Image (cartoon, rainbow, N blue to C red):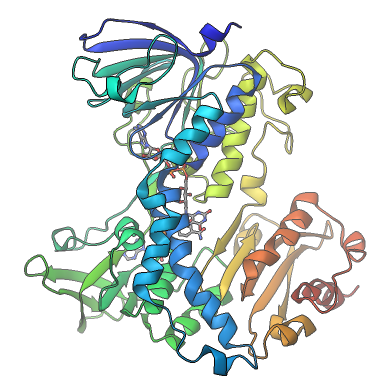
Length: 537
Ligand SMILES: Cc1cc2nc3c(=O)[nH]c(=O)nc-3n(C[C@H](O)[C@H](O)[C@H](O)COP(=O)(O)OP(=O)(O)OC[C@H]3O[C@@H](n4cnc5c(N)ncnc54)[C@H](O)[C@@H]3O)c2cc1C
Ligand SMILES: NC(=O)c1ccc[n+]([C@@H]2O[C@H](COP(=O)([O-])OP(=O)(O)OC[C@H]3O[C@@H](n4cnc5c(N)ncnc54)[C@H](O)[C@@H]3O)[C@@H](O)[C@H]2O)c1
């Protein structure tokens, strides 16, 4: 494969409306997932173009994971320090300063400037195409790029030139081998009268705010709602949280209960099981009034007034303006995939599946790490199937499944962990971390499990961490196979305890062997010994 072919061939004229280029692989969406897929796909000599409509780095870098964790960290650090004996005196006067936290958040998001990420793409040999992409047929992607033109014939994008008006406005990208969709997800706005007109915050406004409102009402009881309730309470807002069920319903019930209690202790007005009926805001800048009932069907209504309202009621795959109908798929729906991340229900080309999807857009999981894992799988499948098998490239070791065949579970070409060992960490206080199914979902899947729980505060490591250390952990043991199939940790820095459990679940380590994984004394990880003892070992 020549260098020239790697950077793509082009046809078209300056001033024409359409400019056509060819790459081996076109990745749509430059979030963390698309970046990983592009990187892996390019490792065996394939030319890769990545199309991004906003900022390279995606939601995660600028309006999700990174800014939200920046907002949460100062309060967490202060709370941890405040619980350690001997420090109270020195902490007098130390408080979370909203302006300083927001400035730190700006730093973490690089002031919403993606220059650094673009530099990484360039270093990885990936061609960036800016604009909004839509599928236009088999292995064909049309990019609307009103401000941005095409790269020069040697593949170099000249920013000054690309902004000139005589450059092509539409670029047609032809993929010789594969297209990967990694367009992420968008928030859902429930159909509540007056809500849309009240200009509610989504997670974008919540993570990108330039000041903390005096009061904030949050609708939702999931991950965004609980994390942002924690962050804004830290920043000094009076927070009311309206959840239609319990909190964090994707986790074990005890996790939501512990987080709910902690939010209340932090001054958040937590209302569970409520039905939001109406939202009113007289004019921009005026307070918002939310009318709700204590439960569904309850005639008596209550009201809460706040400066801002955040809606955190879930996210859906971003496929409504992606041209998926051009390949026979339904707009607005997630792109269902097999374990090689090939999109189902799309006619295969002469070389087998050509359309792949990974990350939030698949509807499988909605976390960055799990999406990046899927991106690595998709990229490796493409690189191994279509690349030149360059020596030393990790994908060269194993052959991907033939087109139309299932991937062998746990092979590097199968995202097996999505179904059995997906992980999540919620950065509330206490943190909530889990791997695999909950007890309820495990039973629904037909697994014969026994749950073993332990109070983390009873472990010696917790005592020396801080006397107020509280939390609970639970493992799910498959009693037939005698392996751990799931685990949940709720407590300070619980996220850092998760990976040991993930290794045990993915490795399907028998309990008898786990017995020999001796946790160091006095760490909170000694809870693993307590689990095994409680199970009867
Ligand atoms: C507030 C919040 C906090 C979160 N915190 C965490 C966390 O701590 N840890 C964690 O693991 N997960 C977290 N998540 C989830 C995480 O953000 C997502 O799972 C992750 O961003 C998904 O990555 P992605 O690449 O699939 O999509 P995205 O990050 O959304 O990236 C998709 C990219 O595609 C681009 N795009 C979309 N359509 C087109 C198109 N037609 N043409 C061109 N470009 C297009 C978008 O502009 C975007 O840049 C959080 C989510 C939220 C909302
Ligand atoms: N730390 C992390 O990993 C992290 C942090 C934030 C977000 N995320 C991801 O972002 C995704 C979106 O987060 P989210 O909190 O918006 O979704 P979610 O699925 O976690 O929670 C949605 C909440 O909204 C409620 N809800 C849904 N429809 C409603 C309606 N019509 N009226 C009232 N309540 C309604 C649900 O009962 C639930 O409590 C999650 O899947 C999560 O994985 C991850």
